[in-house]
Image (cartoon, rainbow, N blue to C red; front, side, top):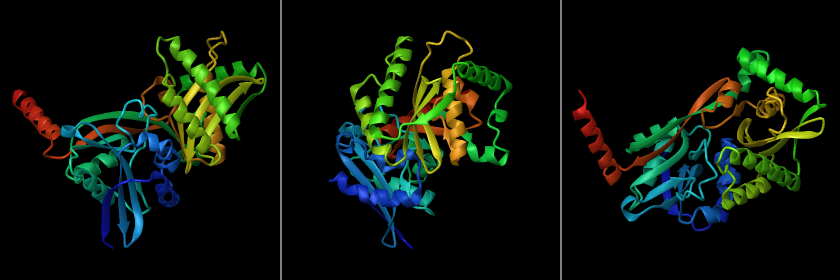
Length: 359
């Protein structure tokens, strides 16, 4: 059946939730494409929202929410973002159009082509997308003059189960040694446990504790940390209130002998666990105590028990992520420009200069 793609200003975001949730229930997308994330403070974040909708035979098969931003000569549609740094401080990853099962590259390309053809639009801002989204943008006729790739280390839990379920055995000897020493150090204080906050008030209290530990660690390095901006904290408090009752947001606390050693703020949807933020107690004066390694180890073992298929550390090639991961994916931050836009013409000229200057 023929695909029909339409674009319109999204006048009432509240009315969009029902359609989005319905498609989401079929698609089982990453958390960042769920309405829990996209719809969080949406009226504030999407000040000039544009919705691209794909239907096949009258059935909804694709949705993409953009926000229009920028100056007239370089106006952009930002996929699932506002285009304003402060409002986009809640970092999005695994971004992309929401597609029904069975819909793939051609549907995505048609949706991005429709967005690019909007009057007055020079480019699409595609943040934290997978490579398939960039290829779809190119198939839609876009030029990609700006692109940054980031490794996203992860643990493929399904593969571990097939290999016998021994997570520690999949790690390097050095990481295994560090983890075992750290775990023994904390076990000397008493039973080591990992708990989830099951109520919104409890989760918000643990989020506050996480923010305090996170901020203290970053201030000690001369930096403010992820939650220094008031909007960032307000967004995540709203997200916790939305996601905890749905089982999509986990506030986890690791303790030793009843003493908290760290908190994890994870997202969990369709078996895909995303380790989003953390706060650890570094007060123990022992070089063998590694609260971050121990907390994530406990969370990964929990995900294995619950049947999740992936524990994703998200973008960033940090050493602890590489140490604990068994694999990695790639996420891309890019602009996809119309072929005749100022941005695309400038990129072609720059490439031509580099080409002629090459020996």
